[in-house]
Length: 198
Image 1 (cartoon, rainbow, N blue to C red):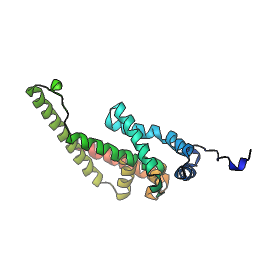
Image 2: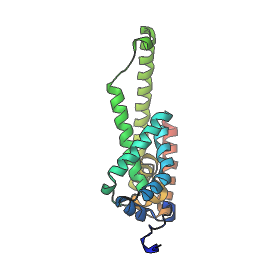
Image 3: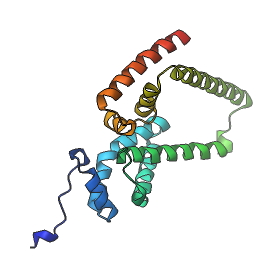
Image 4: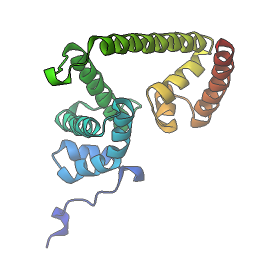
C-alpha cells in the first residue's frame, strides 16, 4: 500500500491541530469535522442547555449549530477567536431566533386552557419577574460603567462572550496574566458596588 496517499492522522484540537483540522474540514474531510465536533460539542451543548433549560431543545439546537457550522465552514476566519467561540456565536444566534419565534406564536390547545384567574396571576408574576430582570440588568450596567475600559472588556469577554482565558487574551491583545488580573480586579470592584446597591 502506498502510504503517501493515506490521509494524515488527525489529532484532537487540544493538541494544537485545530487550524489543520479546519483546513481539512473545508476540503471536505469528514473525519476532520468529526474531530472538531467531538472536541467542541460538550461545550456548545452546555452553553445552550444552560440558557434554554430543556434537554431536547438543547440537543436540537446543538445539532443545528454544527449543521450551520458545516454549511458555513468556508466563512470562518481566524481573527483572534477560536473555532469554539465561532460555534458559540452561532449557538447564541439560534437561541435568540428560537425565543423570538416562541414569543410571536402562542400555541395553547383548548384542553390546556387555564381559567382566567390563573392566567391573571401568571401574567402578574411574569411581569414582576421581567421587571426584576430589568432592574438587575440596569444595576449591573451601572456597576460596569465604574470599571476601567480594560476591566470592562475582560469581563465582557470572559463572562458575556464566555471565552476561555486564552481566547480572551487573543481577542484583547493582552497576555493571559493581564486578562486574569484585570478580570479579578473588575470582579472585586463589581462585588463591592453591587453589595452597596443591594
